[in-house]
Image 1: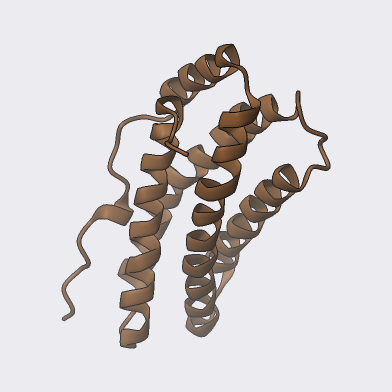
Image 2: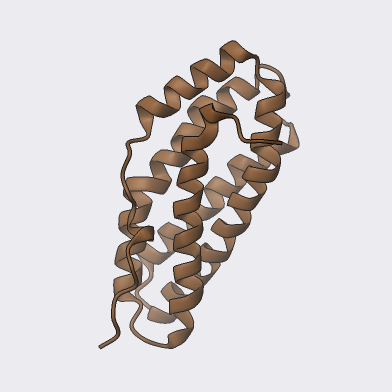
Length: 162
């Protein structure tokens, strides 16, 4: 199914998330200091991913539960994925051991990639077929208001190794 234009801003955010996940996958195994990658991830989290999650939770899911039970698998999976990914960010912030941070960073990249693919294939399709045109218009307006047009740190080129 073609992506509804009212959801394209969320899909564009997903593109940035996939770029960050790919950066993590490519840069993490090099064995170098993960500090710069971690710093970029925190910028991406604060400027891009956290506002994106809030928008999905407060705008998209809030409309979907008018039609679906709160216990619906798509609602539960979205919320569980968001909390799991947020938990990995917290683990990285709290970690004093570089190995723990590196492991959480690797899991974050994999989890983010899988979550984005699931949302694009399942959640957004469900949204497009479930919400009314009026609800999709209101959702699109909410998304446009909440998500600024910025390029998150996930789209920055990798830092050169020293």
